[in-house]
Image (cartoon, rainbow, N blue to C red; front, side, top):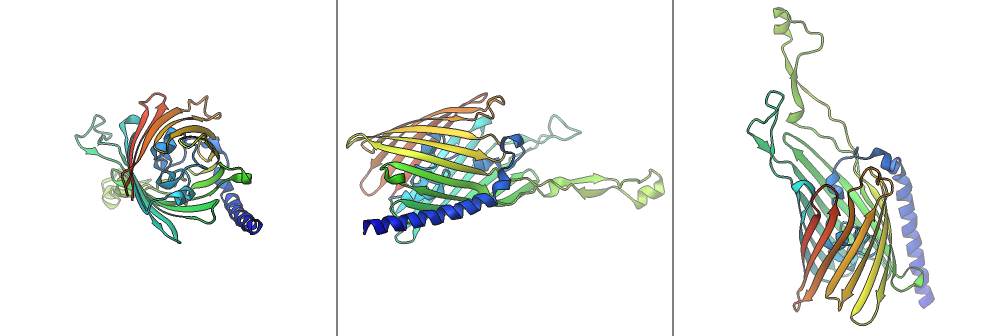
Length: 360
């Protein structure tokens, strides 16, 4: 019977890998040129990380992230949610005084899987309106609005294999122009790889979707038709009119993440977990992320991590060392988690994340 179960697991894994291989071949052109196209993509709010645990681990949780913490790193990981209902809220002090607000809720439907909803928004603040005639400001202000809303489904197919799929709606509004689009994330996690207890594998494909384009009244300009003269008759017949500027479309910042993790139980109360992820990006250099977590009695956690980009070192890759801590406390029917993460940043204040999670 055990051999039959192993055979079923291997067949299931092979099917998943075949499907993922087809997807990878289909999106291969998206990633051509990788680090040679730095800064030419759009919708960068998609790649602002959320989840204090994953950030503290340097973004290395592709294979190890579980529960709602996994929504950003690998949607397959939320299948490990043990509560019937869970909610998570976080605030991050991002670069240039930008605030990132995030909230997520997940529901565990027995026999069906996990369904989760999440929202991420950027608080950029007010920006003065300037014009060619008034470069110092008109006295008016505008506030850009960036929003990403997601719906995720994940299921644990066997005791080792989990899959997940996320659909994201993207909305950007800047003054009188806006753009919207959608993106898809897909992931798989495999536990006890090679029958080695504690060795986990993860693969995630992120932000695959069509190009986005800005439109709106902010792209209207008043101009005279080309070739018009200044004679009174011609000026009357061909007066200046409003014309719409056609904005160029832009691609989404897609990535493919491959990760490994290893969990080691020292004794009944002390545990260690090591994780690493290779991240291939279509509009920036490749990243190598590593992290480690120490857990005491499944209640107190200390985390460290590091993110490295060999391609972008000469271009001053601004992120590096990360750290954090968390407390997981059972209140009797309600699980309370409080997590904190710190991410060092060159030229700007460090990113700091405060997160509260509740499980019922």
